[in-house]
Amino acid sequence: MSAYDKAVKAIRAPLPGAPELRDFVRFATLAPNSHNTQPWKFRLQSDTVDILPDFSRRTPVVDPDDHHLYVTLGCAAENLLIAARASGRPAELAVMHDRDAGTWARIVLGRGARSDVDLCEAIPARQSTRCKYDGRALAADELRQLADAAALPGVDVLFVTGRDRLEQALGFIQAGNGAQMDDPAFVNELKDWLRYNPAAALEHGDGLLGKCSGSPSAPDWLGPLVFDLAFRKAAENRKYARQLRSSAGLAVFVTERVDPEGWIEVGRSFERFALRATALGIRHAHLNMPIEVPETRPGFAHWLGIPGRRPDLVIRFGKARPMPMSIRRPLDAVIVP
Ligand SMILES: Cc1cc2nc3c(=O)[nH]c(=O)nc-3n(C[C@H](O)[C@H](O)[C@H](O)COP(=O)(O)O)c2cc1C
Image (cartoon, rainbow, N blue to C red):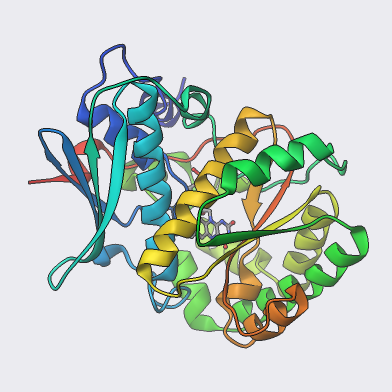
């Protein structure tokens, strides 16, 4: 087994029989997070875990107002809540604000009955699966279970499953993708987080490893050159067409509150959706371009029937084989005094 695969296996190991706070933090770090930047810090006290933003890991071009950063913190918080509850540590989350740290999450753990055990088991198995899916629709009961899992006060989840509607959504996705690929600042920021081979991903402990998206590995010197040659708008738009046409549908998450607290709630709702999907053998991946590009966002919201609101996440779902798993930084790098 390669050093990369060993590291991935270690961070995704099941919780031990008597988990400590550090074990819950490990499960929190398995959360989806924008560009795999892992923009979080964890502060531990006896029965409390604080999840703080790490602004040194911002992605200011794709995420100028830290929307994705706070969605990411919400995903991590939900993982921690689920891991604690599944271990007989019922836990509650409070969103806090202060001048130094900004908005952050405090989770206080108690003791009691176990719950969310199946969602907890899905945490190490969940991944963003960026490949072609099997093209089949989901059963009504599967869709209902996904909707139930994502239900959280203040967050709406809109499902798009009809082929005509999905084809219309593709127009917004391709327009957003085109705008991003025309923006050198976007492309440069993305390149900062690309890892062209498992050794580089392991060394950084973060970033987007090519093989997790189906790209071949390359030496560090060659990867950027191949990327510049292969990263072409028409080819990327064809890839997104294949991916969406093979998916069972899209789920669009929309919060009522357009602020960090609302974005944390979106992350929590999305993570419950993603874990329930994983438990059901359903894959998911992001197609956020229409909501990341300010010029495409209002038209997309209007098309969704929510004019004036800000859609927060665009997620495709369906069935497919798994892809290689992504890496995380070691716990000592994310736990702060
Ligand atoms: C707020 C947010 C935005 C994301 N946006 C994208 C995206 O636009 N495209 C994409 O392929 N993945 C996107 N992702 C997925 C991350 O890249 C992924 O979670 C990360 O690389 C870790 O991989 P994993 O989910 O397989 O553990 C996003 C994730 C989050 C939480």
